[in-house]
Each structure stands twice: as structure tokens, then as C-alpha cells.
Length: 354
Image: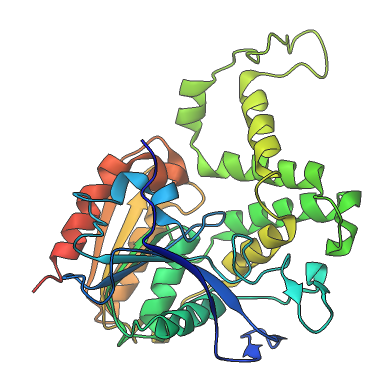
């Protein structure tokens, strides 16, 4: 079945020029790619902003089809569903591959540090340009969940519900894995300090393979691959280059990835994940209902850390609920298990219906 098409997909130029960044830099101008499902002016349930993960896009129904569409929790006949490609990405929004109007060349390695806070402030400006001043909910998983939480802390009067799935400030192991992925890209000679003519394919492929290990679980890898030789017929016991099936899978994922995602955007967004943090004072600003969801086999954002964040929210008098999805899919569970995610989203939205 074809993915649901947005009613509107357009680029929105922000009014703030230059756009000043939390890290001290600035961008002369910013454009964000937006996709809208349904009609914001007439949707009976209001507007829901759905924030994508690291390599997602504004087209929510393309990557979260299991929960988006008529009769599903993100139903465009009840709500207007809006996706915004984040600042720093490569799917239509201003990022390292965009042209710097000051030089006429791509930003490349000179693209400044952006934060989750920069992303959400840019989203808010884009929504204002679209005529959207208030949100029923902000929902996201992984870095999308970070955005949902930052919306709730920074714009507490703008939303009624924050749903964050598999999202907390990164623990040390997550910081370590992101560091290794960036090193894989930057140590590829083809990276050229970010000014490459062609993708640093070897480095970006390796970065994606490392990431795929962190997105899955040991149980899932054992179930899918075990110790079987690669399905191409290689014998890992006969040569150094011979691969097991799991290695063939990781190499295949890396090879697919460098054809669809920009290496400098990968660097920018993974760094934004690293620097995301939440103080108790920031959490105390939240007025929306918070619904946090952990994934039982997630070792990138362990469920225990998500549960602890919910407890921190309740400790500063925020209305916070915690649920956990039992899954072997690891961090990818919020994408791979739509039948488990859907009832949680429906229940969370039900709490704010009048």
C-alpha cells in the first residue's frame, strides 16, 4: 500500500534573519521543509506536531505509517498532522548541504553547531508562518522525543501534551557511540573537512553500521542472524574477508544509507543529540501532560533512564505518565512495533480530549 500523501508540502522561510543559535553562531537565513496531513484550520482535534528521528523527514506517513492515517492514532480526519524536517537535516531544510547565501557555496564543514533548542525554536517560527499558534500535542521518538521534551520546557503555553518515546539526555555509552560514528566519517579521507564533492561513503557506511548495532538488541540479532555465514555463500572460517550473516546485514545497511543521507548532516544531528540535556528547573516549567515511553530492550536510551526521567518530572509537579513497550527490537521498537505504540498514543491523546 502506498504511503499517505500530505495535503500540503512546502518550504517555509523563517522571518528571523539572521537566525541566531544557542551555541553562539548564526545562519543568514533558514528554510524548513514542512508536510501537513489534514487541515489545521478545520481539524476538530487541533494540530499535532510529529518530530522525526535522526534520519527521518517531514513526511510523517512515510516513516510512521503504522500509526498515521484514517482510523489510526494520528488520524488526519481528526487532527492536522504536521511534520517539519529539522534544522541541520538534508531533506529540504537548511543544513550543511544547503547553499550559504553569503558565499554562494554549500556550508559543508562550516555549518555551525545546532541544538535541539535551535530546532524547536525554528519549528515554532515555521508553524507561526503557517498560521499555527497552538498545538494539541508534540510527539516523537529518539531525537524526535528530545524535540518534544524541549517544546514542553521552552514553550510551555503552546501545547497540551508531550509524548516522548525512547528519549532522554544521552547516557555515556550513547555519547561514546556517537563519537565513534563521527570519527568514522571525519577520518575518511574523502570527507575533506566537510567540503567533499562526493560522499565519504566508507566513513558514513561504517557510522551507520555502528548505529544499527545500537538501534537493535542482542536478542533480535541472535534470532535473525545467529552465527550463520553470510547468505551470499561466504565462509567466515576460510578467509579473513568471509563474513557472518550479521556482518553482511550491517554492510548492506551502510551501503544503502550513504546514498540517501548527507554525511555532514549526520555529524550535525548526532552532535545535537549529544548536547541535549534537561535541568530540574527546565523540567519544572512544563505545563503540558507528559507521557514518556521506554522500550524494554533499548540499550541506547535504556528504559530505566526514561522511567527515571518520568520520576524527575513528577518530583517537580509535572503530570507525567510512564509506559514501557516490551520489544526485542531495541531502540527501533517505536518504529518496528506500531501495534504496540498505537494504543499508547491513543490513550495519551484521550487524556486531553474535552
